[in-house]
Amino acid sequence: MSNPFGTVPAEAILDGRATDAYFERTRATLEHAGKNPRVVAEVTADQFPTGEFEVLAGVEDLATLLEGRDVDVDAIPEGRLFDGGPVARIEGRYLEFAELETSLLGFLSQASGFATAALEARLAAPDSLVLSFGARHVHPSIASVVERSALLAGLDGFSHVAAGEIIGREAGGTMPHALLLCFGEGEQAAAFRAFDEAVPEDTPRIALCDTFWDEKSETLLAAETLDDLDGVRLDTTGSRRGDFRHIVREVRWELDARGYEDVDVFCSGGLGPEELRELRDVADGFGVGSAVTAADPVDFALDIVAVEGEPVAKRGKLSGTKEVYRTADGGHHVGLAGRDGPADAETLLEPLIRDGEVVREFDLEAASERCLADAEAVGFGGAD
Ligand code: PCP
Image 1 (tube, rainbow, N blue to C red):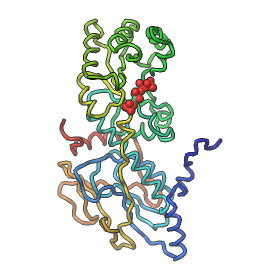
Image 2: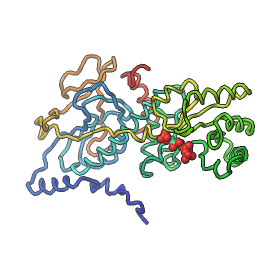
Image 3: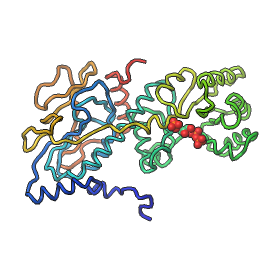
């Protein structure tokens, strides 16, 4: 039972078997021809800035993948935003990393897609509690990638227990409809009471209030049942939703009218940045799932841009080793390395691996701070 779900094991990723077959054929051909040139290869989504920034994530996995190979690697720090030009650069003999391209791009593409979508959700409701609830939409083996990307982009927490063990942060959440259904209609108070008695003291008392009756009735029942009720969650199903903002305001009104001003109202169920903007002034927090997990992967490619010190590139790509810059006004610029960059600019690529050794430390909290600061610097998401 070493791999009952048929997922690709870590060893296959590290040793390069988690690759597209054409890289194996490339190795065979180059070895047959006695060729293994020194190259510079860059990971790039767009060649030139497009005006659309994205968040870089997956850099620690990139380091783990390339550690021990005879290469030097530079990369933009995790959490920073980019818009065109390389996010990472590998220098070394091509066959040191040829087969790793498939996994390398997968690590960066998917995590960066999740993180960019999570940042959109974060900035749509900057003052609200926003939790990642989407692990159920992805293969369980990558739930930790979703949750880590969500935290990187500044979400306040996540629901997946095993991901929490990997990340080193405790998972959170409320209660599912299944709990209420097991108690049955008319027994919601019994379910809320049993939950209150069963879960640890420090678990927030947040009652799910949309299972059998309307949101107002179940909310008031929860407030009357639990002295220490922290909040209610409304996950009103789409077919019944009508005007969700009105429902939330009505629930808030009825709570306040009875002196339950301290009871928060949380919302979930198919919510994305647009809904968060619509609800953020009337709800206290949100659970977002598919808004993060359905993100398109960032379309990174790895391209050779120099061979034996000479600039070269396929059609459509820019030859030569590049540098990317962030100017004081939040601009992103791409230029040739070794040439003068824009005035008042910092370079974004930093050493990640030297002679096969990882030379950078990873800290999720620091990366998250970097992400939010950079989002502000570049005006990610625009004014709203
Ligand atoms: C919540 C919601 C979604 C999950 C969480 C978030 O589930 O209904 O399914 O993902 P989304 O943003 O993609 O919708 P619960 O209310 O806990 O679901 P259940 O009915 O299974 O209890």
